[in-house]
Structures are given as C-alpha cells and as structure tokens.
Length: 278
Image (cartoon, rainbow, N blue to C red):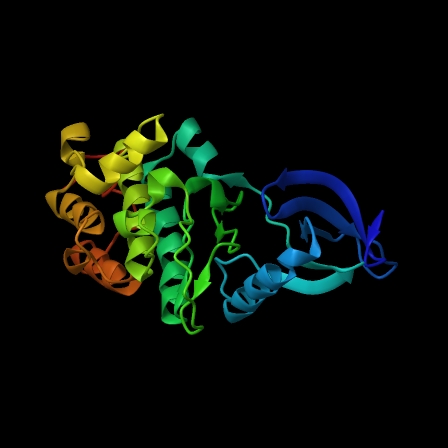
C-alpha cells in the first residue's frame, strides 16, 4: 500500500495512543531507495495534533540535531507526517552497551545544543528520554519525537500530564510543564551518564511519582566518587524541586556547564576516565 501514492510501507517501527510509525521508501524513478519515517494517526481526530507537531518541526528546521520534517501528505482523511529516517541506535541501547566518557560528553553537548535552540524558539519538548535520542554511527545525535512538544507562543489552557515518568519534573507531574521541566529531564540524563543510575526509580508508578515529588536525589558522587564536585553541583541544580533554584532553561544550563568545564566534550569530566579527573 502506498501513502499518498509515493511512499511504500516497509515495516512498522512502533505504535501508540496517537497512531503508528512506519519505515517507508519513496517510489520514484528519480530517487535511489530514499527512506523516511511516516507518522500516521489512528483517525482524523488526531489531524490537528499532527499539524501542531509539523508546525514545531518547521520551527526547528535546519538544526542538525533535530529530526527533520520532509513533507506533510494526506492519505484519505488523515494527515501523515513524513520525517527523515535516522539510522543509528538509541541512547538507551548505548547506555546498556557502555559508553566512553568522551562519547557521553559529546552526546550530551549535542542534546543540549538542540534544546538550547528549541528553548530559544519557546518550544518545550516535554519527553526528553534516552529512547527518543539517536546516536548515528558517526557519533552525530538526533532528538526525535516532538509529538508531545508544546509551543509556548500559542495560548493553551491544557494541564494534561505529559512525559515519561522517570524523566518528569515535579511540576510536570502536576500538569504544569515549563522550560525548566526540560532542564530536569536533561539533569536526569546527565545524572545517568555520570553514574549509570537514574536519580529516581521505582517499578510502582505511584511510588516513583512520590519519590520525584518528595525525596532529594542521592548525590551522584556517592555512586561515582571520582566525579568532579562542580559537575555534581550542576546535576543537582538541574534536579532542584523548587523552580526558583533550578536553571530556568537550557541556555542557563549550557552557560554554567561550559564555564565550569570549557573542554567538556573531550573526555575527562564524565566517567569512565582515561585518567583521574581534576
């Protein structure tokens, strides 16, 4: 079956409450096996949501670390998003396989770079997690899935709880997301890169939310004694429950990180260390 008469379905990559995701190939004499990803809603009621996602992706167009929108097509009464196909493995898989310290640093810098750009555009991602982050074979990072992202330049009265529980900020659990909620998720990822552990976790979802809302995270240096104290401070500031104590956005986080560690990205800040960190 062809989508819009030109995209052939190859295999289903995933599905969820909003729709399905397919690997597709363009059928054309002028293209050589062009691959893409098609996001297809379950029904036309989701068309507005998909158009909002497309609008956000257009705002991020051209940023090297954001997945790119190729086109919007209509299939019957459905709005289908055709996005670039990103070849690689998720950060979650890299976590499980093990990563060099310099690889971790470069990946986090790239993630931070795209989130700085998004926040400058007044866009919240709201679902930053390792499964939505792809590292390509050349080390290039792409952030995927802006389906739950929010454009702060548009008025909205929604207090819907959106996100993946282990990466959700306290205010996000309460349905009051803001740019600093993305900073929390970045802090969770940086904590995991530094310690190979999540700051908050419980199989029971209610208990996990209680931990996030009520308990302080264990200091990362207790899990990784060689961690620079300045980095521990940055991580814990990302995970401050009080918004006034947390970085307000990705720009503030990047500025503090790069001021504290000008050579972050070259190794020596995140473990495993080739030599003892300063």
